Image (cartoon, rainbow, N blue to C red; front, side, top):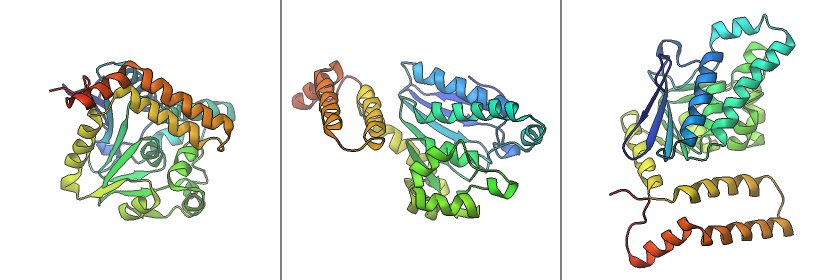
Length: 263
């Protein structure tokens, strides 16, 4: 999909770059962009050619969160209309968070409000030293509600208590310290760093990465128990017996690349 506000590029390796393209509005999103992004993520997730998804923003900012004109309209909505609207954004975050393909946020500049949520929903996030982050909702008498499960999972409850209430701006170093970013590089090094990570992901089994991602969700959402031990044992048994698992082990012992590695 390529629209005025959203651009998708897929290279011959299966690396898809989904770019929010509203630079004049700092890639702020409204209901239309939210719907387009959700639909495009669903399409990329079901496309067998796509192996990795990179989320990016055009211009100087990653995403300023909610578009001001959209927020102005929301102020006139009834509670029921606001609930429907909020569920749309919640759907985008859930879709991105649960994508079966590995996702990388490439954060070149400011990420505010819902933009922080997008970063937190990606599996990996690399930012430039110029990147900054702010959960600014309380300045408007609002709260970072639908993004909160993902942001709290990324930075922890203690940090969330501070930044949800203070609306302080975090620089890239602080975001890295808290776990929102996995890596911070110079602005001129950002694309190369993301490319290096994408190339590393392409060497791994697609099904095993999806299963590993689902495994993290499983073990982080329930206490260690007999049932958990059995569930994890069942998952490795399934992986070993799978076609991808057999191919990976066969390639390792034969000292060759597995079938999913192109070239």
